[in-house]
Amino acid sequence: MSVQERKQRERADRERLIVATARELAEQQGWDAVTTRRLAERIEYSQPVLYSHFRGKREIIGAVALEGAAEMAVAMRSATAAASAPRDRVVALARAYLDFAERNPAVYDALFQLDGGLAYAQEDTPEQLKDAFAALMETLGEAAGDGVAPELFTEVFWASLHGVATLTRSRRLLPEDAERRVELLVDRLAVL
Amino acid sequence: MSVQERKQRERADRERLIVATARELAEQQGWDAVTTRRLAERIEYSQPVLYSHFRGKREIIGAVALEGAAEMAVAMRSATAAASAPRDRVVALARAYLDFAERNPAVYDALFQLDGGLAYAQEDTPEQLKDAFAALMETLGEAAGDGVAPELFTEVFWASLHGVATLTRSRRLLPEDAERRVELLVDRLAVL
DNA sequence: TCGAATGTCTAGCACTGCTAGGATCAAGCC
DNA sequence: GGCTTGATCCTAGCAGTGCTAGACATTCGA
Image 1 (tube, helix red, strand yellow):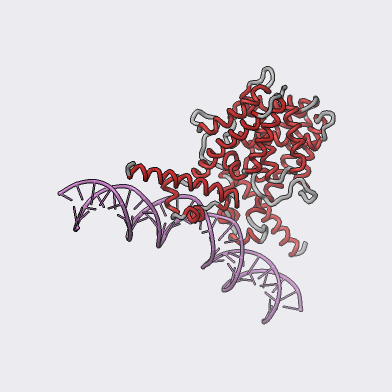
Image 2 (cartoon, chains in turn purple, yellow, orange, blue; image 1 turned 135 degrees about the vertical axis):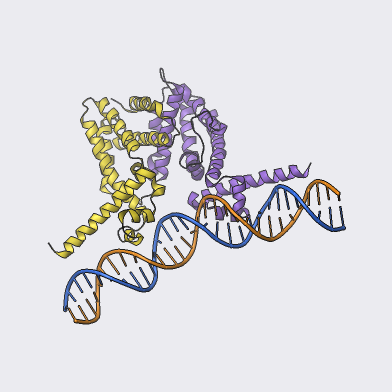
């Protein structure tokens, strides 16, 4: 293997290290604590190195978001695969979504709360995001009911989950009724 | 009137000026543009004056949020008062909510997206916030359906609206289907 | 009229994201 | 082997952030 190839590989490794470290730091102490200085120190390089991989902090957030979207899609698909009845699938999906948001708050923020410079709901939307939405629609499409487009239904269901997830995490909704909220959402929104 | 009274009044005036200016600046250029320096310059005082009224930027956001909550409650009540049929009332409420969020994005952020240091869903929650939730529940309570607590139903409906509002504003949902989303939400969630 | 209290400002701290320019080091050529 | 060239990385710095200590003026009460 050539020297050039090795350097390219090392560069790719370092980029992954940056993203992983940013994510780790964000999950530990929140995105506010992810400063370029702290991040640089953790990866044991100087600040400018970050800018040779990413245009700025925003792009780093975007990279974490893409990584998270892929994981979220996996989590949702594996959760729904275990259930056979349609209602069980929808409930499993909703739980998996809220569970992911709760367990990975920083990643969830990067995806849906912060500005990672990513395009959503467009042609140039990254594949990971499209696929995460596809994962939602695979289960929700069959619960849309007559005369309602699967896309529209998925958007509305997703938005509802998103509202519950964010309001719960910011302590604007008490976590106690979480399970009852899921049941209510599923039973009312989904046509089964 | 005593000199002391005049001073107190002037102080209260200045506090209102700070809040109004912060809100105006946030609506014009976003909360990121609301720096203590810029805010101080606009009210034609030096920075430290802000700290004689508020503990910090967070408390200023909180003050804007409280002002916004009161306005939002008024907007929702006047929107629902005009409708007589139950479904019309719920639709009017949903539209008024989303409309407020769209017309006052900075205020909406202060209320539900940023940290204004306020307590939600607790005993020591400010009256304005409790009343805004009460305004929601006045209309939604009668649409909860049998066996579902009005509070729980209101929370879920609110969360759904919140999800739609935030995802639309961050361009994660396209604004085109806005009306259809409202119809779907109301027709599925509300029991009329 | 004078000391005290109140009000306000200047100047500064430690931090942020980001970048210009210099040092270092390895690759390639004669 | 010695030299040049180019890539790589770091030091140092800029303009901005939230917030505060301490100096200064002004006004009040005795």
